[in-house]
Length: 418
Image 1 (tube, rainbow, N blue to C red):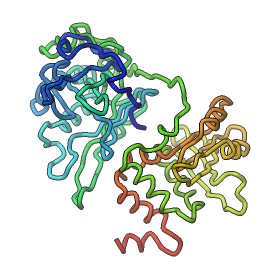
Image 2 (cartoon, rainbow, N blue to C red):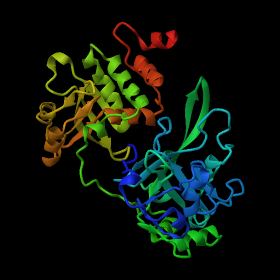
Image 3 (cartoon, rainbow, N blue to C red):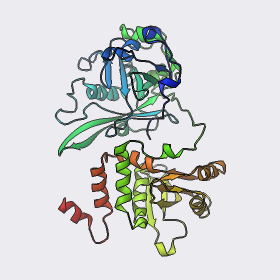
Image 4 (cartoon, rainbow, N blue to C red):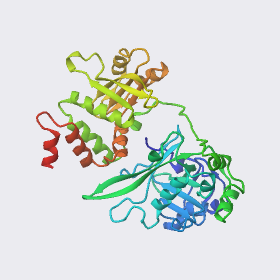
């Protein structure tokens, strides 16, 4: 899921003036303003963390090639559709894409060597306390506001996560641009439970001091010494999403969602297998799923099983899925939700997938009564597709044509025609 929305800097009090940034502590989710000269010197990050530069997503203090990085900043705009960096505040997980984002470079030989840093850091994280002691702390900043250079501090990052395998933590993924294939990293970090990063520690580390000294945050010390993650998990105070929060806001995302609806125009019931596939993208442990025949559909477009446990001793939990292929001005309401809920048996859960949005009353009734129903809206669909490499309208159309061809057209024929 994407990074949570952040308020505009015009509506809140900055944590410090631009002139004072070099002397302040870093407070979680605080806004730090940019300058007003209209050039790169307005960048606040290089003032907050001197020596990391004022451009790019990877900003190391030191050289990745010489393995001398003392501290590293990751900066994300959160607004690059092809590379959907994403923070999940409820779990503390953060997904970041490397810096080989266009063809023409070997993956580890980008100008800033960001991917080289990722490779070495994630490898060292599994080698024991002495190796982890050489890993630089990572500080995450996100662009704040539609204009200007203001940023928001999003936390202290440790490579990996408590529930991830090494393959999940750092994966080389393929992308295609103008027919040219290239690789990039998808890296997963954990935001550690540290509300304030002391200025004294930042300066100590930048000056070459041991990161476990000089006022080291306890969460970082624990990770280095034991590889235990004190994650900053912040459950949402509300789970009711507005219509705007459930629909894509940029043109390219709207085109992707429109491509899904258009593919099933006039045969909306055929969206059901697609909804199952989207659920599999979100929940890979899904097992066998049966799409029910329309003539005997009792409120469940599909029924299936979700597997839990080790491979040698798994249990299966049954679920029911319902799909609604609707336009963005058509909500899914109480009637549709009640229809699915009434068919759920004891210890089952439900999945409701729509290309539009869920109205407020429907969400409130499901959450207030604690029904085990997962709601996947239009924006979620776009995010899922992008996270799995379908980052443009053309890519989504190709995926739909091959996986869910129109009646009388086989996926093989589609691929051959293309």
